[in-house]
Image 1 (cartoon, rainbow, N blue to C red):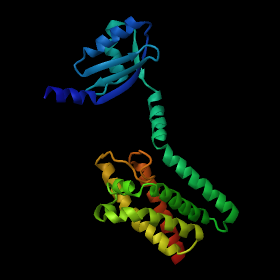
Image 2: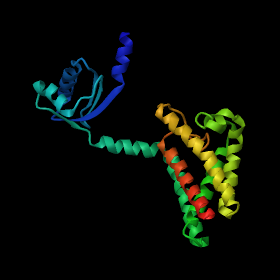
Image 3: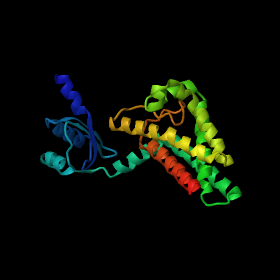
Image 4: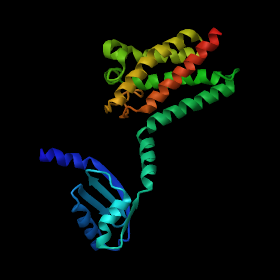
Length: 249
């Protein structure tokens, strides 16, 4: 039971800045003082960067920490302003393959629209076409591994395992239809049929905080499932609905 309690304390990691340190003695003094607190498991201090990494059972404000160490010297603890920036950088680094792929899709769509587009909404058709073709090629590299990963959150594949095997070919066919401008009613309907249940499954997994890989780029990339995939799918669904309404009207 004691070990379990200690593990919970280590789960909370916060990073701050310490001002006023001049030597290793300051580091040792502050570290000792902080670790005397019952809720603080460990204080990791870097003199050069002035960073304080705190492992604790609760979150401390900079003012609370400054008050704790005020008796051992003229030190002040501040919020780490780079923390938010680091999170943003880490996010883009984690999902870089998706952003690069979407960037390529957007670039190809723009080029096709400039050269061949007659209507303003055709850039969306090109986007959907390149989206499905490029994403299907990535999945086709290892269909079996993709299908297994895909079944973790796609309700259809979870019930019918063979659907995960044919899914990349469905995407490839949709991409061809959109780029050729053929069978658009069918293509848009299928887009909604395959993406809406999938999006529901993703949202369900995210709400449960389950850490599973996203299969949108196949099995070549180790990318965690996130709201980014939800946004991708919903964007495609909105465009599909737009075309269906436009065609019907």
